Amino acid sequence: MKLFLDTANIDEIKALKDTGFVDGVTTNPSLIAKSGHDLMDTIAEICELVSGPVSAEVTATDADTMLKEGLKLAAIADNVAVKVPLTEAGLMTCKTLSDQGTMVNVTLCFSAAQALLAAKAGAKFISPFVGRLDDIGSDGMTLIEEIVTIYANYDMPTEVLVASVRGVQHVVDAAMMGADVATVPPQVISAMFKHPLTDKGLAAFLTDWEKTGQSIL
Ligand code: E4P
Image (cartoon, rainbow, N blue to C red; front, side, top):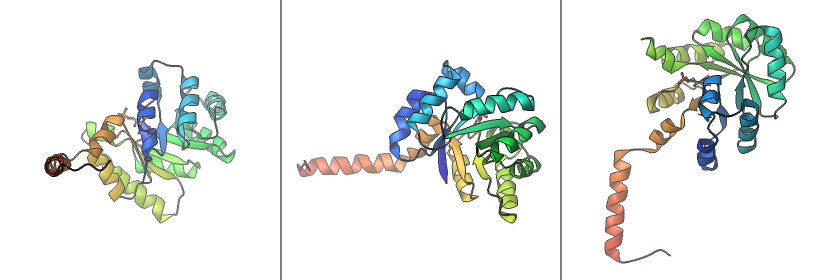
């Protein structure tokens, strides 16, 4: 499973990009606003830092303007994935951009029916928001299971990109279900490193090593 970083913060991306597990980046208008920086400049900088897909979201709501915005975003770099919302206008834009060879990430997906339509519109990625479904008492991961099954039934090439990830268990569940990608906030990546037995084991090894009086270098 690929891991994308869910942030528009350049420092966070720089800190993790050399680990080897950053396969792409996702942004959205809220993350751009939080970064306090210009959208076009930020996407260009991220695309230089990371070679995998970098999602940049349109903000228009009608198909004509969405397409113009999408073309402008796609022109920033070859690895831009244009993000469109799961609306009728968004899916029309998805079809046009995908037919032209541009990667499209269809976002704000909350049902399997929506995911089926996005795949038929040629989306490269579908982004179901698991955390926001959990927030309203639904089960976000059940939606992932449904979409993975439907796409597999028909060999649909659209990649399931698990979004709105809130914790490590979402990432593990996504991998167990065979999702293609999880986009993960940096704080959840940090939590993925951690296990109390790792810390305890390392402390014991270092204490025992010190007793030997040896040094490797
Ligand atoms: C990423 O593509 C999504 O926009 C993001 O994961 C949404 O996360 P949130 O629900 O925590 O805002």
